[in-house]
Length: 344
Image (tube, rainbow, N blue to C red; front, side, top):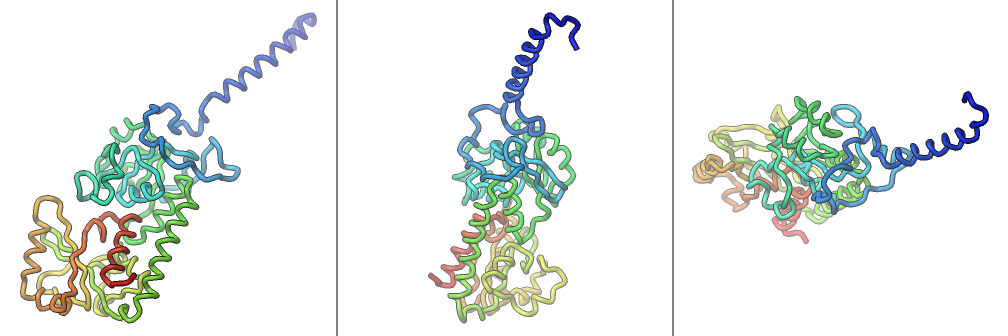
């Protein structure tokens, strides 16, 4: 290969030294397939206290892991340090798993966070809301992972994925556990996620076992909004929880075409009646949701309902029982149900 045989030994030695230098230099570079792994982010990241990822198989290490999700398959870093989350229930998932996001969409109600999580969200940047995340602001946070939802953000998926590996859950209704486990797996915390789900399901099963004859009561869930009255059904946050708890709805509510909600007029209030009514109000700050609640609660038709007359129409918190939609709210709702039904 070389023209001068006299220098063959010298050239060979030099080549070996050069090869070793290149290998060592390569070890100091971040993996080209994980360019958004946060290696170049400021050391003052709020994520410094995130839990270590679980051990993985051949796909572990700097190369990341492949996650199958609503938008396809995405390789994510093994130990994401700067996570942006774009759903309220996703925010609760991260917090429950011990991960503090660098950015999150604001809560539907709250300023900017729900009261039950605000003490855990100090220093987290608000990046818009679920329906309209701020792409530029998200990019400025230099995330190494983005978690969102197809139902809410499908149109901007490509923009988000160009910023950092982006994983989307499919939908947002009642079955929060499916989304929760996707997020746990994405974060490399699948075993911890499984344990948290098992803990919730165990408590739900214990309620069902201890409630006894109380499960014979039919329950109804009503929401007051600006100009609207809704009966919430099986495919909702409360609906999925109630099915685990053994709480059932009046027979006439099983005949609705939709399994999500049935919007009713004031004249149809008798359809909301049951042995027990749980009701909550979506108030955005303009007072209109509260006005609707006040109007209905003072209406003679509402006052004539069996649950109301028996003192079993119970006002609960909209954020906990519906809007937040995540694992923290689910556990708080379960705590309240234990108390309401006087079960220890």
